[in-house]
Image (cartoon, rainbow, N blue to C red; front, side, top):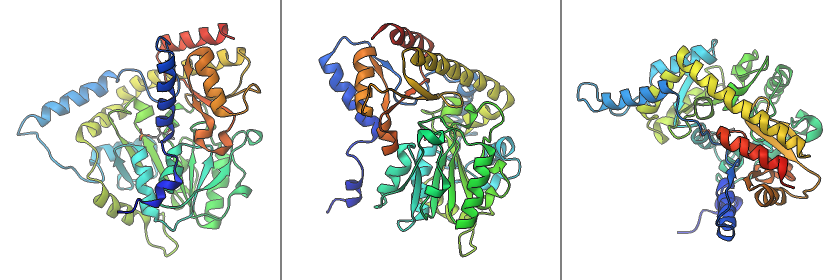
Length: 389
Ligand code: PLP
């Protein structure tokens, strides 16, 4: 069979596979190097007690014939959908929430929903899955530049005609968070030009202060937006796998048909529902007690991110983000490219970062540094930044 030509549109390796490959080469030449991994944005703290208990309890329930369950509803169990709707979307119903096995999986499934003809716009820089899943559908995305002079936000005047616009707040990698005014302008623009916004709020639990945590906080957004949520960074469940997607009833195609009906049809075909273990863990995470336990983890990650940010500043780097997301976006005149900056951090500090170019052409020259590390590693990274030249 002929190879699917869409694979020619993506780099041979996904960004983090490429980083791992280069780190492997470095370790072969420097086998004794003690590396600190501040590259991939993955959580490092142990699961909160309430989540781990829910996993154990459900696992026991599955081992008994009286409480065993097999396939669940494709859309996810109702108690979890209700809790998500009540906690995050008071104006929407549980029927508009779809449980997933993680935000990334739904980002890819959304490409199938939109089909190969849809014009997809993405922020540049942004989470690589948006662009790569679009390319795997055989087309290049429209890149909407988010440059430093706009606070790493975009100018709606730069948005070419599109059918779907993937946005992320707080943004991975820059940490930029939308203001209410920016969300209002975006929603009004989408209404005027008839495109759907996919609003990725995977890091919304890191937002501090009075900023929108969901696009639906702005009136009328349910007529133009799908929102993606995740338990990965909110509750340290990246390995447990659980997320959700909100498709409001009021979101219509140009022919006035509901997008909701197609999404339900699609997940019934491509997905058999999230693991019951993960869903029970999600319910535990959304109780008041669960939220308290999660909150202390989030604040610990943010404290570590601030420590790193200060250490980078003292070491002479220009740094952005890190206030509403556990990511720092760093730059220096010393570097002409992101990979050069990546090599510099690896060679001088033995710190693994992620090259900004991996998030899109506008990321060139930057590296993303993650605060998702354990305390001891953050302390050691700050020491190295203070003392190595
Ligand atoms: N969205 C963004 C912006 C992310 O950065 C990530 C993971 O890093 C995801 C989605 C993926 O989340 P999940 O683990 O739920 O698939």
